[in-house]
Length: 284
Picture 1 (cartoon, rainbow, N blue to C red):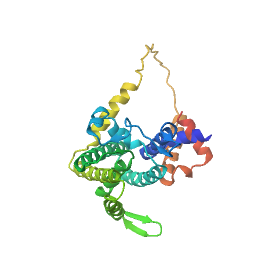
Picture 2 (picture 1 turned 120 degrees about the vertical axis):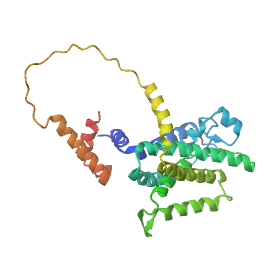
Picture 3 (picture 1 turned 90 degrees about the horizontal axis):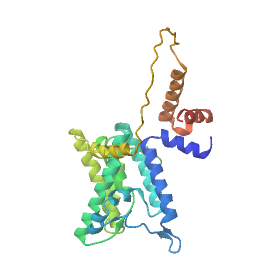
Picture 4 (picture 1 turned 180 degrees about the vertical axis):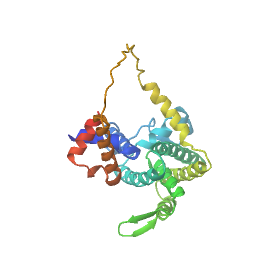
Protein backbone atom coordinates (compact mmCIF):
# COMPACT_ATOMS: atom_id res chain seq x y z
CA UNK A 1 0.00 0.00 0.00
CA UNK A 2 1.48 3.39 -1.03
CA UNK A 3 1.26 6.66 0.90
CA UNK A 4 -1.70 7.93 -1.15
CA UNK A 5 -3.69 4.76 -0.47
CA UNK A 6 -2.80 5.01 3.21
CA UNK A 7 -4.08 8.61 3.34
CA UNK A 8 -7.29 7.63 1.54
CA UNK A 9 -7.88 4.87 4.08
CA UNK A 10 -7.26 7.21 7.02
CA UNK A 11 -9.69 9.71 5.51
CA UNK A 12 -12.42 7.08 5.12
CA UNK A 13 -12.01 5.51 8.55
CA UNK A 14 -10.87 8.42 10.71
CA UNK A 15 -14.22 10.03 11.45
CA UNK A 16 -15.27 13.67 11.11
CA UNK A 17 -12.35 15.06 13.14
CA UNK A 18 -9.92 13.45 10.71
CA UNK A 19 -11.89 14.74 7.72
CA UNK A 20 -11.92 18.32 9.04
CA UNK A 21 -8.16 18.13 9.59
CA UNK A 22 -7.67 16.85 6.02
CA UNK A 23 -9.93 19.60 4.61
CA UNK A 24 -8.04 22.36 6.43
CA UNK A 25 -4.67 21.02 5.29
CA UNK A 26 -5.97 20.64 1.74
CA UNK A 27 -7.24 24.22 1.58
CA UNK A 28 -3.97 25.48 3.08
CA UNK A 29 -1.99 23.75 0.32
CA UNK A 30 -4.42 25.19 -2.23
CA UNK A 31 -3.90 28.70 -0.88
CA UNK A 32 -0.14 28.15 -0.78
CA UNK A 33 -0.19 27.51 -4.53
CA UNK A 34 -2.61 30.27 -5.55
CA UNK A 35 -2.56 32.95 -2.86
CA UNK A 36 0.96 33.04 -1.41
CA UNK A 37 3.06 35.99 -2.52
CA UNK A 38 6.72 35.01 -2.42
CA UNK A 39 7.76 38.61 -3.16
CA UNK A 40 6.32 39.88 0.15
CA UNK A 41 6.48 36.56 2.01
CA UNK A 42 2.83 36.26 3.07
CA UNK A 43 -0.59 35.07 1.99
CA UNK A 44 -2.95 37.39 0.14
CA UNK A 45 -6.30 35.67 0.64
CA UNK A 46 -8.87 37.28 -1.72
CA UNK A 47 -12.02 38.93 -0.40
CA UNK A 48 -14.23 36.29 -2.03
CA UNK A 49 -12.76 33.77 0.43
CA UNK A 50 -11.77 35.80 3.51
CA UNK A 51 -14.52 37.35 5.63
CA UNK A 52 -14.60 41.15 5.35
CA UNK A 53 -15.81 43.34 8.19
CA UNK A 54 -17.38 45.60 5.56
CA UNK A 55 -21.13 44.92 5.51
CA UNK A 56 -21.37 45.72 1.81
CA UNK A 57 -18.74 43.10 0.95
CA UNK A 58 -20.50 40.55 3.14
CA UNK A 59 -23.82 41.14 1.35
CA UNK A 60 -22.10 40.60 -2.01
CA UNK A 61 -20.20 37.50 -0.84
CA UNK A 62 -22.28 35.82 1.90
CA UNK A 63 -20.55 32.46 1.36
CA UNK A 64 -17.42 33.90 3.00
CA UNK A 65 -19.13 33.26 6.36
CA UNK A 66 -18.29 29.61 5.64
CA UNK A 67 -15.17 29.73 3.46
CA UNK A 68 -13.08 31.78 5.90
CA UNK A 69 -13.27 28.86 8.37
CA UNK A 70 -11.15 26.64 6.11
CA UNK A 71 -8.29 28.99 5.20
CA UNK A 72 -5.31 30.17 7.25
CA UNK A 73 -2.83 32.98 6.68
CA UNK A 74 0.07 31.36 8.57
CA UNK A 75 1.39 27.83 8.97
CA UNK A 76 1.67 28.15 12.77
CA UNK A 77 -1.94 29.37 12.91
CA UNK A 78 -3.01 26.23 11.02
CA UNK A 79 -0.78 23.97 13.14
CA UNK A 80 -2.07 25.14 16.53
CA UNK A 81 -5.66 25.21 15.30
CA UNK A 82 -5.41 21.58 14.17
CA UNK A 83 -3.88 20.57 17.51
CA UNK A 84 -6.86 22.05 19.37
CA UNK A 85 -9.28 20.60 16.80
CA UNK A 86 -7.84 17.12 17.34
CA UNK A 87 -8.00 17.54 21.12
CA UNK A 88 -11.49 19.08 21.29
CA UNK A 89 -12.92 16.98 18.47
CA UNK A 90 -11.97 13.67 20.10
CA UNK A 91 -13.56 14.78 23.37
CA UNK A 92 -16.68 16.00 21.53
CA UNK A 93 -17.01 12.62 19.79
CA UNK A 94 -17.21 10.94 23.20
CA UNK A 95 -20.67 12.41 23.75
CA UNK A 96 -21.96 13.52 20.35
CA UNK A 97 -22.12 12.25 16.77
CA UNK A 98 -19.90 13.05 13.81
CA UNK A 99 -22.80 14.85 12.13
CA UNK A 100 -23.26 17.08 15.18
CA UNK A 101 -19.53 17.79 15.13
CA UNK A 102 -19.74 18.98 11.52
CA UNK A 103 -22.84 21.03 12.32
CA UNK A 104 -21.20 22.75 15.30
CA UNK A 105 -18.02 23.43 13.29
CA UNK A 106 -19.93 25.16 10.48
CA UNK A 107 -22.51 26.98 12.62
CA UNK A 108 -19.90 27.95 15.23
CA UNK A 109 -17.72 29.38 12.47
CA UNK A 110 -20.63 31.31 10.92
CA UNK A 111 -21.66 32.67 14.33
CA UNK A 112 -18.09 33.73 15.15
CA UNK A 113 -17.89 35.50 11.78
CA UNK A 114 -21.11 37.42 12.44
CA UNK A 115 -19.81 38.48 15.86
CA UNK A 116 -16.57 39.64 14.21
CA UNK A 117 -18.41 41.76 11.61
CA UNK A 118 -20.81 43.32 14.14
CA UNK A 119 -18.00 44.07 16.61
CA UNK A 120 -15.83 45.74 13.98
CA UNK A 121 -18.76 47.86 12.82
CA UNK A 122 -19.40 48.97 16.43
CA UNK A 123 -15.77 49.87 17.16
CA UNK A 124 -15.22 51.43 13.75
CA UNK A 125 -12.47 49.09 12.56
CA UNK A 126 -12.05 47.24 9.27
CA UNK A 127 -10.24 44.08 8.32
CA UNK A 128 -10.35 40.56 6.89
CA UNK A 129 -10.71 37.33 8.84
CA UNK A 130 -9.54 33.79 8.05
CA UNK A 131 -9.01 30.77 10.26
CA UNK A 132 -10.90 27.95 11.92
CA UNK A 133 -10.34 29.19 15.48
CA UNK A 134 -13.93 30.32 16.07
CA UNK A 135 -15.36 27.03 14.77
CA UNK A 136 -12.92 25.02 16.90
CA UNK A 137 -13.72 27.08 20.00
CA UNK A 138 -17.39 26.24 19.43
CA UNK A 139 -16.51 22.54 19.55
CA UNK A 140 -14.33 22.97 22.66
CA UNK A 141 -16.98 24.97 24.56
CA UNK A 142 -19.70 22.52 23.55
CA UNK A 143 -17.98 19.57 25.17
CA UNK A 144 -16.81 21.69 28.12
CA UNK A 145 -20.37 22.88 28.78
CA UNK A 146 -21.64 19.30 28.55
CA UNK A 147 -18.90 17.64 30.63
CA UNK A 148 -16.93 20.35 32.49
CA UNK A 149 -15.50 17.96 35.10
CA UNK A 150 -14.03 15.45 32.66
CA UNK A 151 -10.55 14.52 33.91
CA UNK A 152 -7.58 15.01 31.58
CA UNK A 153 -3.96 14.03 32.01
CA UNK A 154 -1.73 16.88 30.78
CA UNK A 155 2.01 16.14 30.32
CA UNK A 156 4.23 17.90 32.92
CA UNK A 157 1.13 19.20 34.73
CA UNK A 158 -0.86 16.15 35.78
CA UNK A 159 -4.58 15.55 36.04
CA UNK A 160 -6.84 18.56 35.50
CA UNK A 161 -10.51 19.11 34.73
CA UNK A 162 -11.61 20.05 31.21
CA UNK A 163 -13.05 23.36 32.33
CA UNK A 164 -9.63 24.36 33.70
CA UNK A 165 -8.08 23.98 30.23
CA UNK A 166 -10.93 25.84 28.52
CA UNK A 167 -10.82 28.62 31.11
CA UNK A 168 -7.10 29.23 30.46
CA UNK A 169 -7.67 29.38 26.68
CA UNK A 170 -10.54 31.86 27.08
CA UNK A 171 -8.54 33.95 29.55
CA UNK A 172 -5.67 34.23 27.06
CA UNK A 173 -8.11 35.46 24.42
CA UNK A 174 -9.52 38.08 26.77
CA UNK A 175 -6.06 39.29 27.79
CA UNK A 176 -4.89 39.62 24.17
CA UNK A 177 -8.13 41.23 22.96
CA UNK A 178 -6.86 44.85 23.09
CA UNK A 179 -3.26 43.98 22.13
CA UNK A 180 -3.03 42.20 18.80
CA UNK A 181 -5.26 40.34 16.30
CA UNK A 182 -8.38 41.83 17.88
CA UNK A 183 -10.66 40.44 15.18
CA UNK A 184 -9.32 36.92 15.64
CA UNK A 185 -9.84 36.98 19.41
CA UNK A 186 -13.36 38.36 18.96
CA UNK A 187 -14.11 35.46 16.62
CA UNK A 188 -12.70 32.99 19.20
CA UNK A 189 -15.02 34.34 21.87
CA UNK A 190 -17.96 34.37 19.46
CA UNK A 191 -17.38 30.69 18.63
CA UNK A 192 -17.10 29.92 22.34
CA UNK A 193 -20.44 31.63 23.00
CA UNK A 194 -22.08 29.56 20.27
CA UNK A 195 -20.69 26.31 21.72
CA UNK A 196 -22.17 27.18 25.12
CA UNK A 197 -25.56 28.11 23.63
CA UNK A 198 -25.60 25.01 21.42
CA UNK A 199 -25.39 22.60 24.36
CA UNK A 200 -27.85 24.57 26.50
CA UNK A 201 -30.40 24.49 23.66
CA UNK A 202 -29.63 20.83 22.99
CA UNK A 203 -30.34 19.98 26.62
CA UNK A 204 -33.72 21.70 26.28
CA UNK A 205 -34.54 19.63 23.19
CA UNK A 206 -33.35 21.85 20.28
CA UNK A 207 -30.46 20.62 18.13
CA UNK A 208 -29.30 23.59 16.05
CA UNK A 209 -27.06 21.37 13.92
CA UNK A 210 -30.07 19.66 12.28
CA UNK A 211 -30.85 22.72 10.16
CA UNK A 212 -27.43 23.07 8.55
CA UNK A 213 -27.13 19.30 8.13
CA UNK A 214 -30.48 19.23 6.31
CA UNK A 215 -29.17 21.88 3.89
CA UNK A 216 -25.90 20.01 3.37
CA UNK A 217 -27.74 16.73 2.75
CA UNK A 218 -30.03 18.47 0.25
CA UNK A 219 -27.14 19.76 -1.87
CA UNK A 220 -25.24 16.48 -1.50
CA UNK A 221 -28.23 14.56 -2.87
CA UNK A 222 -28.57 17.02 -5.77
CA UNK A 223 -24.98 16.37 -6.81
CA UNK A 224 -25.43 12.60 -6.83
CA UNK A 225 -26.37 11.11 -10.21
CA UNK A 226 -29.69 9.33 -10.16
CA UNK A 227 -29.33 5.61 -10.65
CA UNK A 228 -31.61 4.00 -13.21
CA UNK A 229 -33.09 0.73 -12.07
CA UNK A 230 -32.97 -1.69 -15.01
CA UNK A 231 -35.87 -4.08 -15.62
CA UNK A 232 -34.97 -7.50 -14.33
CA UNK A 233 -36.65 -10.75 -15.19
CA UNK A 234 -37.17 -12.77 -12.04
CA UNK A 235 -36.76 -16.53 -12.09
CA UNK A 236 -38.14 -18.55 -9.27
CA UNK A 237 -35.77 -21.16 -7.91
CA UNK A 238 -37.67 -24.09 -6.46
CA UNK A 239 -34.54 -25.94 -5.40
CA UNK A 240 -33.77 -25.60 -1.73
CA UNK A 241 -30.22 -24.56 -0.97
CA UNK A 242 -28.40 -25.23 2.25
CA UNK A 243 -26.29 -22.28 3.34
CA UNK A 244 -23.58 -22.32 5.98
CA UNK A 245 -24.38 -20.20 9.03
CA UNK A 246 -21.23 -18.12 8.41
CA UNK A 247 -20.80 -17.06 4.78
CA UNK A 248 -17.64 -15.51 3.35
CA UNK A 249 -19.37 -12.11 3.53
CA UNK A 250 -20.07 -12.58 7.24
CA UNK A 251 -16.45 -13.48 7.92
CA UNK A 252 -15.18 -10.45 5.97
CA UNK A 253 -17.53 -8.11 7.81
CA UNK A 254 -16.40 -9.55 11.15
CA UNK A 255 -12.77 -8.89 10.21
CA UNK A 256 -13.66 -5.30 9.26
CA UNK A 257 -15.54 -4.80 12.55
CA UNK A 258 -12.58 -6.19 14.53
CA UNK A 259 -10.14 -3.83 12.75
CA UNK A 260 -12.39 -0.78 13.23
CA UNK A 261 -12.74 -1.68 16.90
CA UNK A 262 -8.96 -1.83 17.15
CA UNK A 263 -8.73 1.64 15.53
CA UNK A 264 -11.23 3.09 18.01
CA UNK A 265 -9.25 1.69 20.96
CA UNK A 266 -5.62 2.12 19.87
CA UNK A 267 -5.68 4.40 16.82
CA UNK A 268 -5.03 3.81 13.14
CA UNK A 269 -1.26 3.51 13.59
CA UNK A 270 -1.71 0.38 15.74
CA UNK A 271 -2.80 -1.63 12.68
CA UNK A 272 -0.39 -4.03 11.02
CA UNK A 273 0.49 -3.64 7.35
CA UNK A 274 -1.73 -6.63 6.50
CA UNK A 275 -4.70 -5.13 8.39
CA UNK A 276 -4.29 -1.79 6.60
CA UNK A 277 -4.18 -3.49 3.20
CA UNK A 278 -7.21 -5.66 4.05
CA UNK A 279 -9.23 -2.62 5.18
CA UNK A 280 -8.23 -0.65 2.08
CA UNK A 281 -9.26 -3.48 -0.27
CA UNK A 282 -12.52 -4.01 1.61
CA UNK A 283 -13.39 -0.32 1.20
CA UNK A 284 -13.09 -0.43 -2.60
